[in-house]
Length: 136
Image 1 (cartoon, helix red, strand yellow):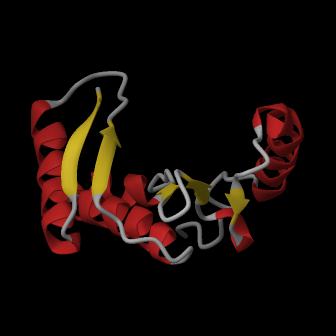
Image 2 (spheres, rainbow, N blue to C red):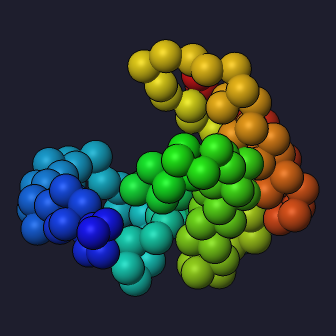
């Protein structure tokens, strides 16, 4: 039978939560008084001047990537990634304008990379975002 919970799939949610707690403590020294923290931590908002603020977020697709690889449908995961990031910005009242990608793999498979990037570009088109750069 296929796993139906994070735990059954090998994801230790409690361990991940504990890591996030430690990370919050470690990162306190990098905080700035002007940084606005949003409820739920979906994005950070930093005032640039009296009339302008910048919202920042990052996200990943998590274990959904395993299903996308199995189905050979990586374009959908690219769309999902952009949507999750844009949604996190909207949740703090920001208007998403740009997206940066990060593609990390042990072995670059052209077909997979192309599909994923096509999905990211489609997601950017759907959300009205500029794809302004990234890292591979």
